[in-house]
Amino acid sequence: MARKANPIGPNILALIEDARIDLARAALAVTEGENEPDFALPDDLPDPTDDDAVEAFRLELIKTLSEFDQDELRPAEQRSRRIRALADGKGVTSLTTIIEQQLDDAQSQEFNRQPDQICRSVWTYLNARETFEDAESFHFARQFRDHGKLYDAFEVELENHVALDATAIDEAALAAKIKAVLELKPEISCTVKALDLPTTDTHPASIMLIVRHGGPLSSVYDHRQDGRRGTIYYRPPNEATLIYTPSLRQIEVCADSPVVRQTVSDSFAEVALGHDISQKPLTWKRYNLSRFRTSLRLQAPEIDGYAFAFARVVEAEIRLGI
Image 1 (tube, helix red, strand yellow):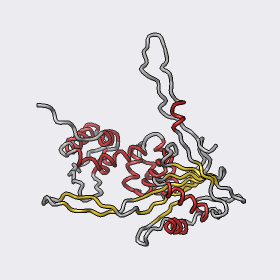
Image 2 (cartoon, one colour; image 1 turned 90 degrees about the vertical axis):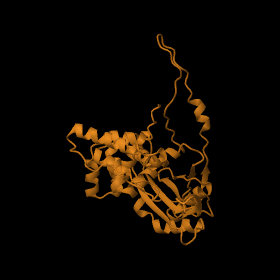
Image 3 (cartoon, rainbow, N blue to C red; image 1 turned 60 degrees about the vertical axis):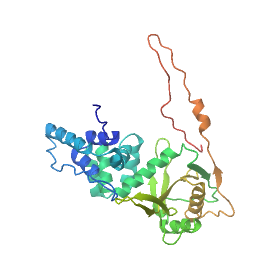
Image 4 (cartoon, rainbow, N blue to C red; image 1 turned 180 degrees about the horizontal axis):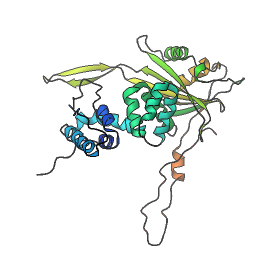
């Protein structure tokens, strides 16, 4: 008889294997919807200094989760993927950048006490969810700069230099402006959060805005226990991330809709920079990066004694607007 395939996804397995066992169990026990199953995970946590007991507990977690279907494990797999994304590569700097601005001293000390990057990411997800989500937004914005369909950049022709940081942004006024221009109904909330981004090797000091608002009302069918079909109505969350670099007088914005990208950029220029859009519209730049892909093709090298199937660039950074 063929062995049953393991339904546990790679991100759950990696979380169980790599994170401190108490944090891994706590993250996997999280549920965010009434349709998610209760995994009934073992709660008799072992002594963290007893390696054999810890390993046995990890195996018990895997055994327990293996009893569930892949569909039932999908939400936990997605949460594990999100946690791991902020524990590796640029995700680490995205998380620490936001942590330094949002957590108080006691929380920051607890964050820094965590033994490694995966534990810090899990701890933030469990104890500072809003900060975790802001770090995700920042991380996605850094990635989306390379995607033309989600990324636009605008130049602002200011007559006078405007000294600006996150504390100078009137978040409430900007949210009200965006809500009015997007013609959102009164019951649909719109929030703006401003954060300072420090200077890095590749980017000057900038200001990041995270704009969140409800999208159009939607619905999905739900299969009920009695076999009948029901309807679940919901309002999906929409988000736009804007990065303003004062030294370049440049606005970069990421959002699914080009209308939202333009609206958020115009509103920011008017409210935060005092720029008269009617007299001097923003200079719009639209980037198509597809032509760069062919220029990064590599010929397979020829070295005696070795055969190479291909050579490939795995990562490239392009600074737009310079």
